[in-house]
Image (tube, rainbow, N blue to C red; front, side):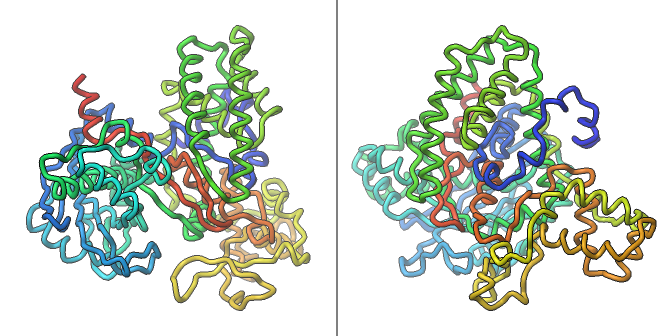
Length: 558
């Protein structure tokens, strides 16, 4: 049963925010990670199901060259990260997707790799796109060192000292991934081949597992190089500093189209989060342990906001709002009447009337945090069988299609696409870099190669085309006459049953900020600090503060 079916007559419906509020870019661009974020889902499963994690292979020489295997054994299956460490000349280090050499390359192997498997992977994984992997591999990834911090950490440990915490905080990672591919790319297993596995049913679980194990490798390789340099006087990273390190990533426009091209998946992510909030708001009372848990989460959020740095003007303003709003939440909790009817709803109502978008979305995450028993099951509904919604309903009368457009897409039909500022940009794929790009329609060539990512304009064009057809005419007749509208009709029929399938903004407007799309997706991944470097790409850090494999093992033994 889908989440939509479960919630169609749910008692929580009255507490659910409408798509007209949730799906605006300004709010999506203020998203915060929650306990439903994909990396949190992964870490809970590893702990709850007593997965066994070890490193059976470490064959890395004094120059840092070699390979390692990180193995994760679950109730039914084993997954192994095979990591290859390279000697990358400085002049070849590049974070661009078109780079050809990296400090380290990785693949997530489905099972326990044999020496023959490792030899095969050693011939292909370091080549990345130029090599080929098989359906036995689930991901393909690569990473580069943050050279200054990596060298600082190696140097300090080799001298028997801990690295400077301020240096660690300023960067936050020893390596940054430049790509983590899955879902059938370059010969890897198709998503459909593994989606039925319970541990991989939630979105991006193989990618999150890959990055989590890469994080362990980045610390291990740094400590290895320090031991080579310092010998017996070398020390390992302290647990406190170790936890401060995550895996960096710079994400640009390549991620933005994903949000648009997967409407059912986007709907299910947002629907799960909104249902979680509604469940919390609908509670008749506030248990003492939940109130205490929210207070603990608030303290962590305040600490995170205090160390969060950015120089981008948009993010600087957001950080100002966030810090102010978290202080207001703290003040509110000091006199919050937890004995009033539906106290969580009262808290949310106060926040929605008082806080900025940034503060409201942070409050959402805080309210979910102490309610795992109430909301964690929603993670099981965040995947999507997109093939199930691909089939067009050709028998639908034009009258019904018009009604869908007028109800679900009123926001799109209100946009004047004859105004230059509303068609100022166009999405295309760069021939040279093979990356999504935004062009300026008035000054750049390439609009003939425009990608169909401005759903609002496509809806407006479809609505105009309907005017020449009688209400009783089936959609099939429309599409015989105008096959160019097949894509848009399909989206409209999807939106009829998936209220959060569309971004309710014009994606080719002059003032559109692509980083809003990026932040929405990255928050669902679990990133908790966002540092935009322009309006088109953002730096993040994944798994910062999270446990390591040995921490998970230690927690299970206590």
